[in-house]
Amino acid sequence: MGGSSATVTLNGNQVSCPVRSGSVGPDVIDIRKLYAQTGAFTFDPGFTSTASCDSAITYIDGDEGVLLHRGYPIGQLAEHSSFMEVSYLLLNGELPSKDVLDKFSGTISRHTMLHEQLATFYRGFRRDAHPMAIMCGVVGALSAFYHDSTDITDPHQRMVASHRLIAKMPTIAAMAYKYSVGQPFLYPRNDLSYTGNFLRMTFGVPAEDYYVNPVVERALDRIFILHADHEQNASTSTVRLAGSSGANPFACIAAGIACLWGPAHGGANEAALNMLREIGTPDRIPHYIERAKNKDDPFRLMGFGHRVYKNYDPRATVMQSTVREVFEALNVSDPVFEVALQLEHMALNDPYFIEKKLFPNVDFYSGVILSAIGFPTTMFTALFALARTVGWVAQWNEMISDPEQKIGRPRQLYTGPAQRDYVPVDKR
Ligand code: ACO
Image 1 (spheres, rainbow, N blue to C red):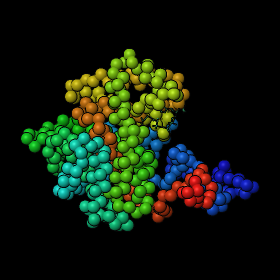
Image 2: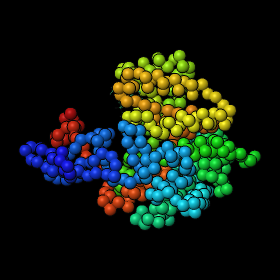
Image 3: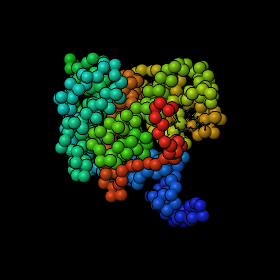
Image 4: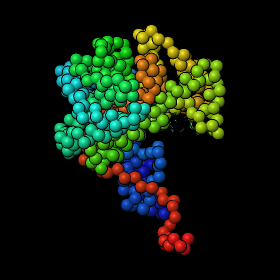
């Protein structure tokens, strides 16, 4: 590879591919002309060596355990900022002044209500439906309700759709919960914070006032910050791919929710807590560590390992300290926290995990906190979807406004039969 180009030699042909540098991070080899010049594709299932777009939103250095949003380290944002401020930052690129932040928060507050007909839509779901099934359906259904914000070529309409999505997700998620427990839906209240409003819509009842515990509100707000965006992960890439055809923004976010639901992605915090509960007591940890190392056993330590982080996930550090704060504020304890701490300690000292660079990810501790707050495990991924919505819309907006944007259309290495003649059924 030369300083500014890489040379591919194929069948005696030499093709020069430009090398592009970002502001930080690895260079990329621009192979867009490779097929035209060589007739060959590159092969990269799982995209482990492929950058799919330019982006100025989030930067991850997986080896060093660094996560930056618009340049700001996640630890600083989690400590000093709020989810509303981080949302503004992700969408607009800069931290807002106080006035601008107040205006943005006010705009989001005023978009939190759902079209009244959507309440009827919920009643079509079985009572035991998973909240992610409901979220997927209801967010997709929004595309049938808001026709005034779907001209994606108009930046103003794009921003209105983005605000609507960020604002309505807490209402949608809280209603999914209320539906599952058979309690009446609660309307949003604009005098509460984004996160306080969500807590009230989830845990409040019309019969009495709901007290928003400030420590829980802050902890959940921080969890939202930690999940707000994460570069070109599976669900974000899904949103971009769906959006690349010019699809309706609400439908694109529904696609992102569908992808996030999987246990290898957003479903991992639910799976991690279930695993910790199954382990139950510290003396059983070695047995599970041995299972995770056994190639013939499909069991994996949930909440461990990450496609990008080959170091401690910086979000897991913040999560671990938040567990203690929430436990103290609510005066609760949960044996799974002790199991989690000891499991982490044992795994981090085990040659298998050291060699494979497997560290706790954000999901390892988040389930413990969410459970202490009172969320059932089925709601965990719904909370992730709520928080990730801002990342999805920020990335979707960035893609649509990119002049080089094209419909996403990967190719393949075909391994099926070569052309053959059809055989009539009586001759087979
Ligand atoms: N427990 C035991 N072994 C593991 C684990 C684990 N949690 N994760 C990876 N490994 C092993 C694999 O078996 C593989 O071993 P090998 O090289 O001998 O074949 C090696 O480590 C590399 O793993 P891959 O699956 O190739 O790594 P990939 O980048 O594809 O997977 C993933 C990343 C899906 C996150 C994986 O680590 C995993 O399944 N973790 C558990 C689920 C989880 O916590 N997901 C949350 C991700 S974070 C998020 O979505 C917010």
